[in-house]
Length: 479
Image (tube, rainbow, N blue to C red):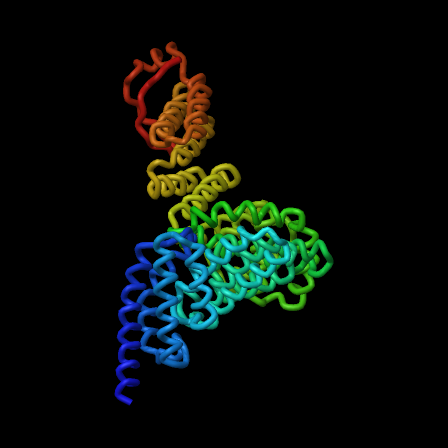
């Protein structure tokens, strides 16, 4: 009995020392695991370490002898792995995987690399297929053993499984589709970009084979783009690297199915049956907006209902745009003002303010109010030269109403050109600068003649107050 107790104590001590050794070794060595997999494993060291408090029989074998053998195999395969002798590492890794697979998460992360190595070395097509089966088993067993941890959660591991299956068995479309679908359901906004692409590709192939409907493509596209847009906006680590390139790929796949007729045929009956379902309204407006179908009546009706039931900055902006397209300009102004008050991002506020300035200037001819909107946009972003270009155009359009003789009617062009120069000076955008230079050249031709300025007792460079609604001091320039 005492011998058995001593042996059990030896096994337990060996387990604890191997835990510390493996945790340190994890940070030193890694075959190309992919950045997201690598970092998620390291972030979960604490969860893995805490799991060692489980009874050894649950992870290292049912008997003391099993545990001792497992520890030996772990030690040997780890040593060969660290020395990059992957062929010998595989032999002992296989023993660990078969006899005590739940011992470590590394068993599965390294196992993927080792099984892929064996697959690439194999030349017999039938045996290569068996290696693919083994690889899939590695992923499934990882979920069984470690699915309770963040680094090996089911949705994440299924995504990696689907990516390898898509690479090695690209014709298993239905299986790939089901795995990616489940992964996305579990991961939601944490879904990886390549999983989203593979899911869309497999779905389209199923539709082409008559096994899924176009409706599935429309709904899936909407779901995937919401995930991509969220990650581009909020995921600083991976948004630019993975999700920005993924977006045009998804758009390109969806384009043949993104017809207004398809979307309306799908959603119009649902809207008629339930016109106040907020989730449905959000889906309709999102889909039609992304597909460029904003001129459709369904888009207007759904957006109007959505804004009434759940007003947001985006719904207010969409209503403003729709009313503007319908030439209901005062209503458009009302909605755009709501959008400005509700938007949180400065860039969104500026967009709405510039539309407000344009409508009140060109359509309603309310010059002072239009200038107020434009100046507010420039206050938020002092480098926004478009605000000053629009104000300069307002000044130039006021010539006939702001003067009663040749000098005063021409003086407004001095104030207008001042704004175009200001736009050119504050904005580094070449488009803005080119437009500003064009307007400077155009309206400088309308400056009063030297005879006119002399007649009124003025010389070039003198200060001059432009009256009317403009009320700005400028300097005299003759042509």
